[in-house]
Amino acid sequence: QVQLVESGGGLVQAGGSLRLSCAASGRTFSNYAMGWFRQAPGKEREFVAGINWRGSSTYYADSAKGRFTISRDNAKNRVLLQMNSLKPEDTAVYYCAASQVATTQATSVSFWGQGTQVTVSS
Image 1: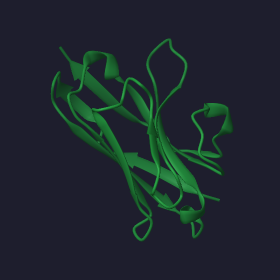
Image 2: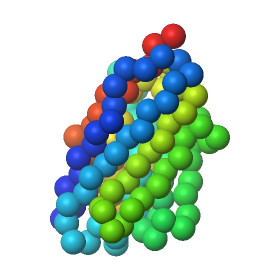
Image 3: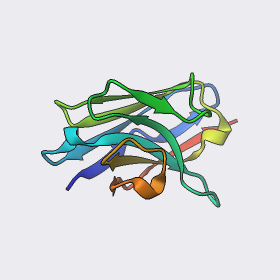
């Protein structure tokens, strides 16, 4: 079992930056691939960024490439998402996710956090 708690969301102007953090509990955190998804009002939850269990491989949605960076610290049971050059279309609730294998599919996620709101004003 893995419990996930996100933090770091908020309101930022377009072009600004935010860093989201996901704190994980459970002894098997390092066994899971981790990811970030987001969901805007009226839209489906979508993949943003992912990282393998070791932290040696990362992958991104096209919308996040070049602007977002995912990282993890297995010693601290933590996953980070650094978001730069934010745009109004990045506004959404961002969810931390743990999965048995690296995935871009929400249906394959094993555990979800409660989400943190990110709002980007124009």
